[in-house]
Image (cartoon, rainbow, N blue to C red; front, side, top):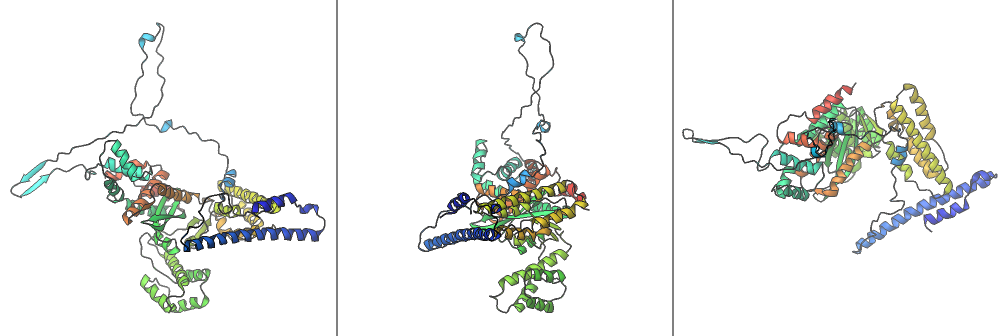
Length: 555
């Protein structure tokens, strides 16, 4: 019997406890319904495990497993909580979409009336204007004749120089257009080639690839400067990750962002140490065993025995990578054992060293989902309410009473979210205590639906991170900003599945960082790319714009 059939039967029974006077009967019925709920959950888990084992068995026999087809199943159901969140958003009214004030008039043309059609009494009453946008795509091939002089005395030839920014057979306009079509328009290299050929520009696909991957104009450095400026100038940062393909292998794109920038970093792993290396901005990772590190070791569930040994073998000074590996070899004589513990030790010591050093700005507040690799990296951590809401959408009760209980709780959940939004709009200190108390009331409830109660308890344990907005009202309540960055990466993969080389991966990260940051700062990406490729540098750098616009916000 499938869950839908069970649910239909339970709906037909329509058990309501408020109509039963006998407490013993009510208690027994409640227990039985909860038993049905648990058995259904266990049955679904067993089905999934059974299918996994069947697929594994079929693969061992050289056959194929069950195809992954998206369907209306519990596993594939939409768990997004955006609909509930948007219902609580303040109705700001429709914003005007008029863009005429942004349009620059390049030329004016008079549309005359045929005088022969006019009656004798017609009087000129001025003009009625309309603005029509147009674009011209035209080639501008230039033959540069470089003057040539020869000095017999010096046995040396002197040649005139081409304008700055002209390199090889293609001018800065074409090179900037190629980069823009790829990283703003998300076009594939074959389609860029086809477009240019239709514009009567004769270029090879290998040349297009070189334009996109060669860092001749320093966009990799631009990306580093953007990230460093954001670290120095903004109070909080958001982070998310998504999988990417690099030369046939799975790697990860770590996306850092906030309203002033988005930066992309492709890395082989998604661990705390990897993220720390990004935050160090090229500075060599070091390790430190101070009180902060020892506290982290305890948080990471490292045994007291190991912590005592570390205290005996170390002092309060920074250690290099070689010194750390030497310490680990003393703690673990068997190299095959203690892999996870070694990692936790390195993480604790590297976080302590990162937060004490002064060469690179440290992140005060990091907003993320509750993935373990994002925890403990910053001085404070905020969690995303949208991710938390998804956990409740994953619950799929079949008992009608539990369905009603879950719906009522979700309404309460998002109503509280709405109250936090109101607080952000008008943060008043006297509101923090009532909101904190309301959180305790909501997330200490016992509904009788065990799976929901377990989920509520887990949310209650995240109070400090979920309510950090009461201390820092500038924080968003969700991590959508970084998820939008991850979506940009995924849309790129729809067109270009993977990068093939380190140079291509670095160029991809750099251009995504530049184009997405330019978008947030209101900078025309094509003009900016052209300005850099042509070596005019007439536009301020994106890093300078971040410092100019956001540095005054730091208290």
